[in-house]
Length: 251
Image (tube, rainbow, N blue to C red; front, side):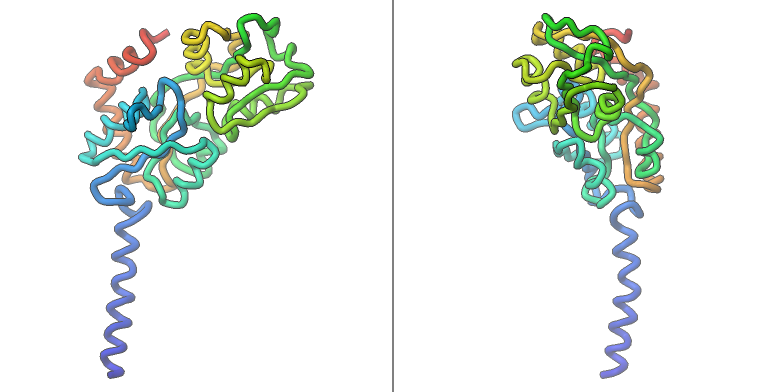
């Protein structure tokens, strides 16, 4: 009886490393054969249409998954929830207009940049606001946890920085006059101004920011595979065709 018990304990101890090696950051993906991507809703980059992911990031992720021989699974969450889900091994990668910053690189690893962007000040078409100096005593909307929030909080004299989980509600409140301005990444500002005709870009605040695909810290195996797939997609012209589909010719 004692020998059997000892044998069972030994077998259990041997099994634990095998299980651990097959999940989380030790393997390629959390679930064999699937690539779990989490992102937040971004018009032009990631949206759910008829129950299916659509947009530049969604299509690019689908192509990457195909190169890796994996089935893509997409879930949309508030931006502020993405990184905690990633580090908790609930998803394999976060991809949704995520700007690469030194602070974020301490918490997670990023792919090679896949999009160059910047930040802009978006106001109603009839607004007299033309610069950051005009935001004194004004209400400014931003998405919670983004670099847009960081920029907004550094502007002196604003009456209030209002935090949102998603862009549609924020844009609606701007148009309805509940906000004086919003700070948002330039592609979304351009899209909103073009499609609504009710807003305009008052000023481009920053340029040269880069979006990357985030993976759990030290998941080098998955990161290398993603970068290799991205390189192939760029070299065969697929990336340029995808960019033109959603944003037109590169500026």
